[in-house]
Amino acid sequence: MARFTERFRALDAHSAAAAMVALPLDQAIRVLAALPVGQAVMAHALLPSARQREIAAEAAHLLPWLGSERFPEGSVGRLLEAPSAVFSAATRVDSAIAALREIVKQRMVTYVFVTASDGTLEGVVAFRELVFADASQSLADIMLRQPFTLRPDMLLVDAMREVVTRHYPVYPVCNEEGRLLGMVRGQVLFEQQAFEISAQAGAMVGVEREERMATPWGRSFRFRAPWLLLNLLTVFIAAAVVGVFQDAIDRIVVLALFLPVVAGQSGNLGAQALAVTLRAMTLGEVRQLRVARLLSKEAWLGCLNGTVTGALAAITMYIVAARQGEGDPLWLAIVTLVAMTLSCALSGVIGALVPLLLKRAGADPATASAILLSTATDVISMGGFLALATWWVL
Image (spheres, rainbow, N blue to C red):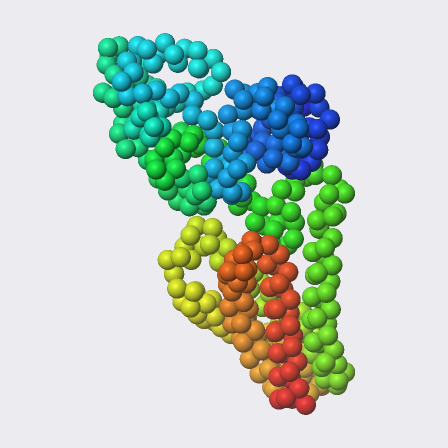
């Protein structure tokens, strides 16, 4: 069974759900119980409604996260589990321990949650404190009052900033009125955030966030092909810009040799700015910085790096142009320096701006951002380089 479950762990949520439809009910329940909570919740949400009802009727005690699909994707609520042990403040320690003897046979208990009659969370009791407390004491005597809690609609990235310095094994989740809705395990929270971060690299180039090595090739093709077709369209746009200056390239062939140099440098610099901005957005740092300050920093870094690399490229251009006897080597070197400086500065701004604009438009900031960035940097770098050569050299 363990090896069978491992195969499901390697699948994306859609493929896992499709495979579970064909399984007997008891086997599907065992698979869901063995999967990481985040993956299990997504796979369960994709099952047919009839199968979901069957699972809910048969396995509510085995799958404490059932019902978490009602919360937004990417929120703490998606990882919500039913609280493992809930008692009133007046409950005696010996009574709580007696009840826990049955509970721990089905679920792992780390904290005991103490609630009022209306479900409001009053405190928590660590399992260790409960064991060593006097049997005649009440939970109100030993509980930690006003414990740290999370909200179900809180984004994972916001929750991670709150818990990163706490490292509790379990976090209670309460609504705005303070009523206990459930709990989230610290390990599950960190696992899901690690998955979200790892998915960014794929999203930047149009790979589905849930795609894994074991995802069927047909599904991978359906999701990758549209983005590759979009990328093909953007490449044609860059090629059209180069085509406008075909006459200049025919007259000074050395310009064609340096097109990849200019485009490559500006593209790499834009990718650096993009990576830093996405990381800042993930950690919530963008909220603390003014966007104008972020863009001006990336523009200045691009200008500095473009000047350094542009100077080396300009020297190379001068040597190559002088040997081939095409155009004015000095002016071609100046064009190379200026074009790389300006294109790198603009690429830095674009790399920071693309994810910000995508987020403002309501889209995932990482989604296909690399494709949009590469198009913009190619058009600006190659178009600017050829335009300057046309104006200053020809």
